Length: 207
Ligand code: IMP
Image 1 (cartoon, rainbow, N blue to C red):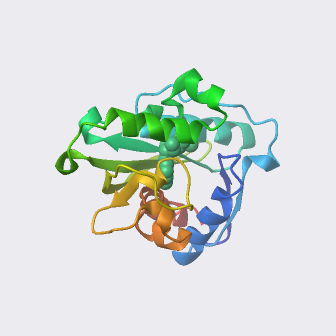
Image 2 (tube, helix red, strand yellow):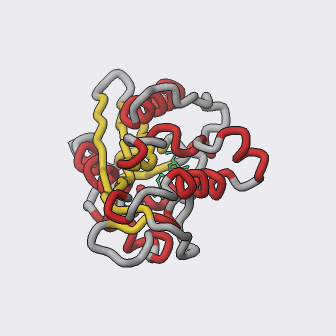
Image 3 (cartoon, helix red, strand yellow):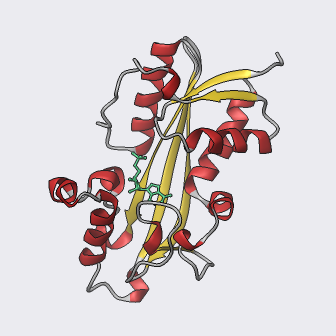
């Protein structure tokens, strides 16, 4: 088969749609990607699984069932070695209600991790960002892939780009945090970039 694939990306984050479109274009995959803004009635899916892959599959299945179109979903987070892999799937919710009350949950999450690592020496501050990306075709295949970016957690925030834990994460082989990188630089090495590029090969098969 050949032709343009139509895909729904299971996100209400408008920035992720052009990011996915760009990854597919760079891989030479012709696809039209739309976000959930085009499907306001799509169900909200709670991230109840213990793994990134499990949560990405939950979201992609729900959107494929609702739209009748191939759906892609991602789920991501930070695993800190000295915290036994936490916050993991709880990355977005790590500071709980306290974080909600501050009005900037991402910042509260980041500071909680910094506090938890306050006594951890520089040689043991390893961490990794992980992203799972899942593709579900209605009545057809289900595929999930994972991308990882290794690095370490520094002690103070640096940089104004990105989001979440970016200001305290320095990738392996780098001196800058991911918040000090341009978006294209980060995408080239990031967990999400790797997962989306791996999934592009699966999406190509749909054409
Ligand atoms: P998701 O939106 O459910 O995938 O949650 C991802 C959470 O993990 C975000 O709220 C961030 O806290 C963290 N996270 C995932 N990817 C990144 C990244 O690239 N930079 C910084 N934080 C990230």
